[in-house]
Amino acid sequence: MRAAGRVVHQTLAACRRHVCPGVTTAQLDQIALETFTALGAVGLFKNYPTYEPGKGFSGNTCISVNDEVVHGIPGSRLLRAGDAVSIDCGIRLDGWCGDSALTMIVGEGTPDIVRLVRIAEETLELAIRLIRPGIRWSDVARKMQEYVESRGLSCVREFVGHGIGRRMHEEPKVPNFVSSEFLNRDDFYLEPGMTLAVEPMVILGGPEVVVLDDGWTVVTRDHTAAAHVEHTLAVTSDGCEVLTDGR
Image 1: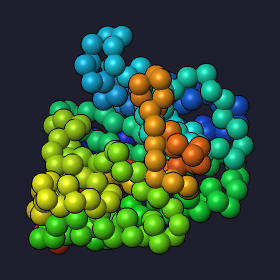
Image 2: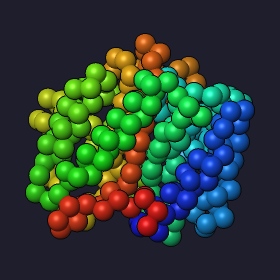
Image 3: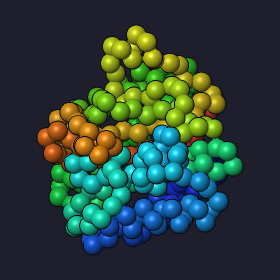
Image 4: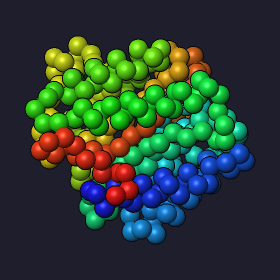
């Protein structure tokens, strides 16, 4: 999984180098495809969830801009200076999966957008510091939620992280917030050897989201900007390791 994570990291780094005003999200998607294919990997997003040609998701990556939270479909949209662009990439290499996302700003962003991206990144960093065997996931999720909301931002509640390994989406569900449903039914203890895709989704405004008519793109209801960051993490005997940081 470390090797798969390295491919994801290199793919996102290639996309980052090409993010600039005037580039299209389809061009970034093609760069991602060419990068992970050259490294021997297969993408996990194209045609998801059926994996039948021409059915399911049409992109090789999810690229979401400004008020798009997740699952944005790459296409003819031109990036503009100041845009917040989230790129999510999942691949399989030698039977093992890696999944990671980053949000970057095209050129210089407004202070609010810069702060949004920073807080999303800090929320993921907080989770990485907190993860260790023997604690419940809800203890981590509560701290993540408190960190975001104490700074006047919102956590997305309709979408969560996930276990990952041989398949991209495995149990357990890994939320970035705490609900009574999760506490009563889905909470779990962290154990060495668990591999989790932890992915804070943070909104500048309110927490409500809607899915567009394309059936995939998730946008904020109030049209404020969102940021999405993600790493694949492995729980170790004394903490956790980031598997998608390029090491």
